[in-house]
Amino acid sequence: MDRGNTKKAILEASLELFSVHGFEATSISQIANAVGIRKASLYSHFENKQAILDALVKDVLEQYAAHSIFVRTDFGNDTDNLPHNPDEAVQMIEGQIRYILHDPYISKARKMLVIEQFQNPELAKLQTKQNYSDVLRYFTGLVKRMISQGVLAEDDPEIMAAQLCLPVTTWINLCDREPDREPEVMELVEKHIRQFFRVYQPESR
Image (tube, rainbow, N blue to C red; front, side, top):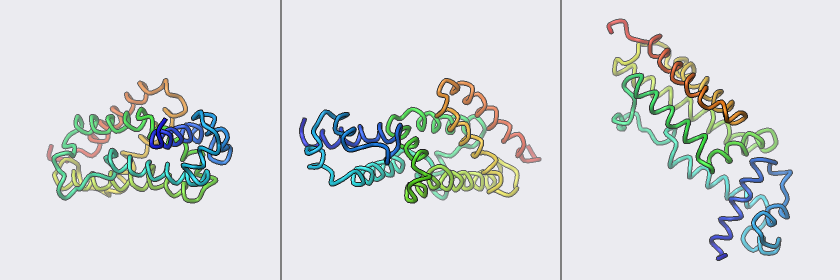
């Protein structure tokens, strides 16, 4: 195994272990054993366990920035990729949910953050950013844009955004705990989105 592949294997094994046992409960020996190398070899790639976590967080942020709709959309210029009706909204949101649930890296990273949020202040901030602040900011911008286009009736956009996105966040957490409930959750998500559009349908339509 060359140096680059070994480093990647260390990160993958660490993420797997951290997502199940947490950072503090995982030892360097466990990581080395999972990769099939000696501890001395692992230390030639990373100074310590914190350095591994730092590298994982950097990777998580890069993956998040590259694939999450919650950080990539420019509501001033990127209007072609925004939903204009319930069908498009269902397709967009369900697609993002499937990515969050099924991308191996993102799924494990999210579980690691759930475990570590009560033990690591920096990871707690990252958990809040990724699973609340960025999501609510995105949906607030989306709702404002749809109001301006006459797709939705005018009301408090932040409250509307919370009504739309926070139940979805809860259902994603449910799927993390009980993966077999994903079909049920997807059905609820679709009903929820369509009802949201009915509730906020402009009177002129």
